[in-house]
Image 1 (cartoon, rainbow, N blue to C red):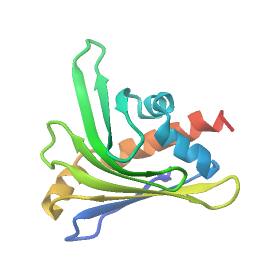
Image 2 (image 1 turned 45 degrees about the horizontal axis):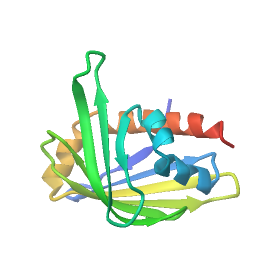
Image 3 (image 1 turned 90 degrees about the horizontal axis):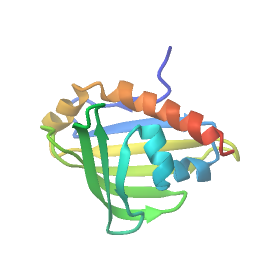
Image 4 (image 1 turned 135 degrees about the horizontal axis):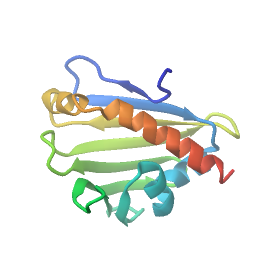
Length: 155
């Protein structure tokens, strides 16, 4: 089965371009990134903090069944324009590739469909390639599939 979330990484580049079309109006797609309860559901993580405003911050955390933290990510929101875009930093704790800058653009394709484009910029192409060694694309596609499923109920 083809992955609906596409990840492009050009040779020698410092960025990754992620695109996905959703069968959701752009307002609902944006809400999936704005509402902490929805974020927690589709990401499968605990939302510790989500301040959707300029200079706001966020923190996500996932634990195993024994309560050990296995994933923690955080960042600062630099720009937040409802239904249009979010600019933020993203840093996964204990990762070798460090922080990255993310530009999330939300685009209405029709009244009922939308497109998400994310450009993630890393400090170097070596740092970017470190992230690409992880099952990143597979996990992101699964998360976006859950987003589509969960948010479709809100339609």
